[in-house]
Image (tube, rainbow over all chains, first blue to last red; front, side):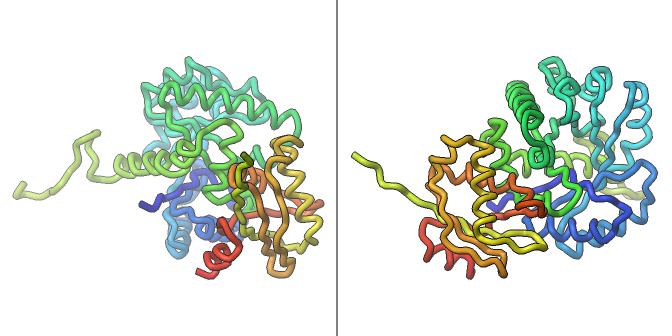
Length: 244
Length: 106
């Protein structure tokens, strides 16, 4: 069966609409059938719809995403309350331990993302994984820093990623690999992305899952939750009207 | 007994607005392999340039079948040739050049 690949983290400059279209086209050419672009919290709905239509032209599914970068856990909770129903994917870029812990245990968070510049700001340890294993969050790894960083910074990042991947697998936390690309030259084919994942000892089968099944599962789950027929997990409205 | 070397041929597309000479291209590939896997790792790949078309931005390289994934990762990690931005994508992989050309035509 043919796999469906997803890139949940394309990061074009939204002010440059030509670049956005080029990246959507490129994603389609490279074999991705679903993409997500992070939007600012107050981004107009009609522009999101417009992008959805452009994606449809290139036979690619599109989901909206928001990247939260809260300073405190209370700020995170407030943002989640406000935005969960507006965006299909919510990622939290954890810049402090408190935020990381709150994000890991909150079932409204889909993706946990950590700073790649400083290993001290990567808070994905066993405690974090244990919290995440009781919630729904996945660990997101961007490929972009693997392409742009060089020397000791890259070596340290690879070492951190290797440890985090081992912890995530031990606690059965889904891993999602995304490009994090700001332009089309930093986008890679799904198999190339999987090959790059071997640098931090993620096996080929797991890497392929990380760019297909794991990402798709998040989108499917959230689309179902955001549909007007959703009542609660396992309960949905099948038919409405007086004769029910 | 000596094991027979099984080779793999990779058809590559060079994604860039600039054109490069074959020397620059192979230099970047060797650089990337050595940077990621060291000189020892690079020596195991048996890399060789088979075909190169600067105008069509197309190349065929050869490697050993056990190091295909390493070479794929190294190619993916290339972001520049000289100081010009570039991306290299693997189009097809095959065990013979003839089969590779057939696959590309399909």
